[in-house]
Length: 263
Image (cartoon, rainbow, N blue to C red; front, side, top):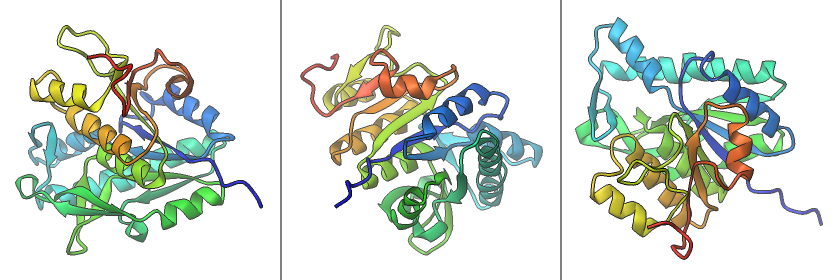
């Protein structure tokens, strides 16, 4: 009997312009050859720019975007259309066989609406059938953070939560690449290793705040589901993904056990 395939690595990228992500994408392409990858991307800055052009206000609650009825079509167009297609095209130019998707395709991501945030959902279910078939066929799925809510309507979902949901369902390794070098302590120093108790204490005290909260909570969900450690780190440098996978000094690693995690 053949050996089962290795669990995939789920990589979350920001949605910056391609010029800003050039080094990151080069690193992803280098790792993609010989490794099963799923890419989930954001696009908050790009979306805010398009909303501004259309005269639609960008609002946030505790680091999460509010998406009303006017903003949702723009979010779908920018995230699933512009950002997703650009990333797929760039990866193809780098020799990576990539397929663009959203969480709505194949009912991949199911979400429960968060009333305070409008047409925004939180992940409540993941169907890995489609993404698994693509991985088995040798493709790199590139997933935009759009999902279906309880009524089958489109909704916007935090990309970190989508990446965490896929990592937990696939029992894969999660790497959250952003514009920060990891999670910081109250003195502004990077924490190398962090366990659930330490993370919750930093969230409760406000040290972890804003957009870092969904990143950390998503990472904790993956660890709790039995996934491997989660890495949060700076994706802007050359070889960032390879370092996240192999360099123990890179970023912050969230682990299940507090035995060797920093307080």
